[in-house]
Length: 453
Image 1 (tube, one colour):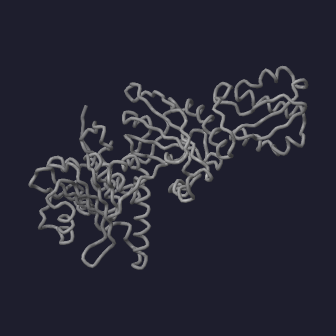
Image 2 (image 1 turned 45 degrees about the horizontal axis):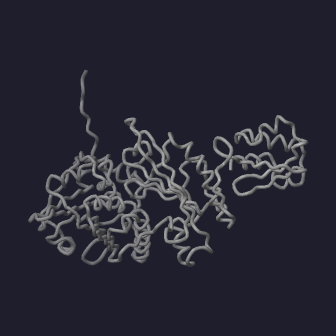
Image 3 (image 1 turned 180 degrees about the horizontal axis):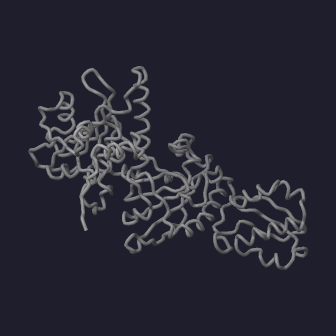
């Protein structure tokens, strides 16, 4: 057997990673903050500047963390670092974030770092133009006298002789080909989106860490509004096998937020709506090592954005050993419910949605679990003199005449969801189209839609 090594083209690789991962400015900065938090920083500063007379546009992330030595800096600049992320404080996974996040926003990444009690500051740079020109993953180590004046001043002001790391992104892509009259507007919008995104993604960290954006301290955005009259339902704790076959815990906690009238103020209600507004913020919130990955959505668990369910938000905490099973992607903006526990989660969602809709409608919330098997009862059958069907919350209340209903259909009632659907359809055929029925079901398609809903 003959083996030939074929290293990837540096030029094509960097272009694919930097432009093909879907980073926005705020998500790129979030990836860079992961590194600062992993370095045990207590203070992180992010500053953005539009192009000026003596400097280009730039963004800088500065932290007071542990810093890096020469060898560590080289490894950090490697695309796919060999470092293993074993510490509980490290938020990295693939060893790509620093490079891919930065180079999605700029063609020039400069990293300045200094360890505690060290008299040496290291400066390294990745230049996309140089990488493409030589088709090699080359990094430059620079002395201060090789830097432009504005960057020298920036380094002196941000780090000086203190420990920490400075990540500088110059000539930001977001300001390319933008009319001078609209640069400030674009800057303000980017700064606003950055504040909101970081306040949400790192809200658990911001209780003990300080993050500043252009000198202003960020405050955490709590998606579960724990200071309000949020109802916390009992946690659902499940075990899931990782790639090695070892069982790992996943914890799901459902939160039923207050209605608008129950909030402490109109301003608090508006803030709770979140970046994507109320309806789009309902659903799952996936966390890995306390870092928020996704906010809202139903992760293919038989759900859709529904006005009556918008008060339901569910935190999902999973360990890093389940990254592969939970489909964690490179830029840490995607995760999902593992298939092994999906059915169990879907079953529980029926009760959670029913409680959430009851609160939305300001009805008494019943904690009773569904009496039917499988994924819960869609139809609730009650004895009556005549057939009446009406929607009630997430279920359908069916009043029927037991005396006029064949025993075979009665045996199907209160069994599985599928058999209840059959029962309901049989009753409609048996009783004919009464006015009560036709008000609810005007066509077979409407019947199907209600069943799927």
